[in-house]
Image 1 (cartoon, rainbow, N blue to C red):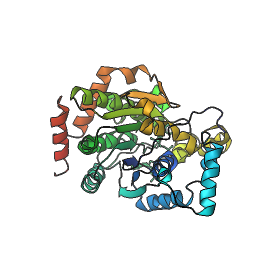
Image 2 (tube, rainbow, N blue to C red):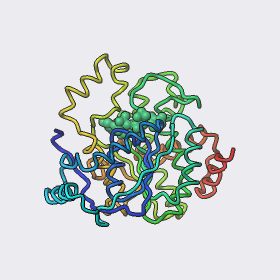
Image 3 (cartoon, rainbow, N blue to C red):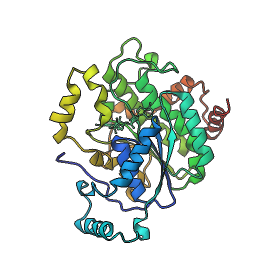
Image 4 (cartoon, rainbow, N blue to C red):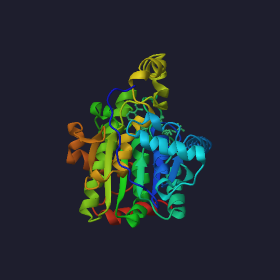
Amino acid sequence: MWTYHRSCTSQARLDGKVVVITGANTGIGKENAKDFYRRGARVVLTCRNVEKAKEAVEDIKNNLYYDLQRKTNIEVKKMLYIMIKMITGSKQDSKDKLGEFAIYSLDLSSLRSVKECAKKILADESAIHILINNAGIMMCEHEKTKDGFELQLQTNHIGHFLLTLLLLPKIQSSAPGCRIINVSSICHLLGNIYFDDINLDRSYSPMKAYAQSKLANILFTKELAHRLKEAGIDGINVYSLHPGVIKTELSRHYSKTIIPGARFIFRNIMGPFIKNPIQGAQTTIHCAVDDKVANETGLYYVECRVTTPQWRARDDKIAKDLWDHTCRLLHLEPEENLSTFLQTVARQLTE
Ligand SMILES: NC(=O)c1ccc[n+]([C@@H]2O[C@H](COP(=O)([O-])OP(=O)(O)OC[C@H]3O[C@@H](n4cnc5c(N)ncnc54)[C@H](OP(=O)(O)O)[C@@H]3O)[C@@H](O)[C@H]2O)c1
């Protein structure tokens, strides 16, 4: 019922394009996968639970057009056209050609899993045109990963940082027209980067950790766009965004970390007033396919429009410091030259 939301209006096709999405088995990632599949892309789902990913693919294929009417920018004419095709079973023309799916195992809370996933994708995929760093967790209890990082920081920021750098050479070889999208959140407004206590060991709170990780998504976007430009690497644009407040599985930890019953309240009482996953997927789709943003990079979007994030997210020094800090957390010596740095990162795959 969300009263105000903007939809991606682009009808761009993605035939021959490869789109990699993290956390695509549910929520807005799954809606992104469905949309890109409809546009003809090879959609690569990277998920920590392969069985859930397979179920998501089946569900997408079985309900490909069922929910289109919930998307506000679908014209009645197109709906009728699709329905007639479904009823008559007539063959799709190239305009409606569907894409294909591939599934890879990826647990962002394990650096080993990130490296293994990247290795497989680099070996098996011929190109990557769009990378969507979508997976995320929100407001869980204080937990450390096997790699020793706070869980939200590693899942939402460090894992995606490493994955992106490992996949970047393949993206570079697929350019021009490539895009990297980092799904952040409006909660970044509450965020700071605690360089002296990045894992929040001294002062953890579930929201503080989430907000830090989501601020990190925007700073990473800004710094990556800057470094690509400095390195003279054209044809790869980077975007960050807040997708809206959406009824998804993201609220799974609320009842433990906010108050008992918080998840129920969020889903059932607030539910009618927040976005559904199709609406929540629109800004990501906009950044991934719309021609209007083809000449923009390093920016932050809300409701399919460029928006100004909080001041820390615009600060060049914080962005650089976070990049260097994250490199050190990954035992990578930060280098100014992006091209040689990427070679250093790639060596992590053989270690
Ligand atoms: N929903 C909102 O209101 C909202 C608002 C602002 C921003 N966002 C952002 O939107 C993005 C998508 O969230 P959503 O709302 O669609 O939530 P969701 O329904 O919970 O989906 C999150 C996805 O991330 C995956 N994931 C979680 N931990 C992972 C890990 N360690 N390794 C790999 N994948 C992992 C989940 O996999 P499993 O199914 O296996 O858990 C799931 O596929 C997130 O980055 C979130 O921060 C959401």
